[in-house]
Length: 373
Image (cartoon, rainbow, N blue to C red; front, side, top):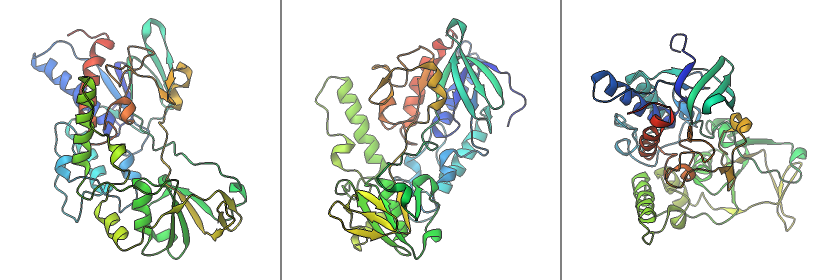
């Protein structure tokens, strides 16, 4: 953690993962431009991170997780991710190390571990942020907390009577603790497919999904996904017919490990069960399956509990944002969101996509923080 902070800043960034660091890069660039005389005053800023170590959520992912794209297409602004020397695409550990290096490279003012308890409106359009290490005041707040700390787990009948273990993607670190066990993996997205493939060699895996799995074409990776999202965004902004979005093409990127398991017949999904029984799960027709563990790969919700005092306007279950700048809240010119998904910018939850959203957000943050050009 840097030295004792000045707790009154122009911009307070909450979250020190990939989105917070991308915003920090552009805020830091304004500071460098000011120092060199290329621009006027730059906003002061600080980044608060609840993790005890740098690396964002990537430091908590399972060991075999790999990116959808090569390192050259998985970088934050300003510094390219080092080449991955292993098989396939970069691992989660490789990404975490890259984020550590990125943070140090630019000397970003990240304070950790600092957990934000609440953000409240203060006089004059400012914000008062209460943390477990004191209070901060700022003219603008940029939320980049992601969703890792708010896993989504459906509540099914009989759940409390199930004698096995219930886990979530957030709990999974690798196949070893579940070796030799009967494991039900729930979820038809990328996490469900990757974890089912990871467990298949050492566990008896039953993969269940609400709808049949939809694989993207094998040649589609993160580069193509970003291009698809970008082309669609440009077409919609220009009022032109929009090409198909990613969701229309499929749900699962067929990374090498998933392709290998799929082609070996190890990823045959069943329909979703309807309830738990003490020894396992049960379908609507009464069929039961014994299970030692059920692993929910059912996604996450934005981690925004600290914003409840603001009474934000919501739209489709998430904070409502500006149509022209999807990272800006409709509830205040100094409140922004970055890195949560398409509702705050196409591909903004990805390494390759968050940079452009961060650039546009910081451009809007400068006047919102009361700093003139």
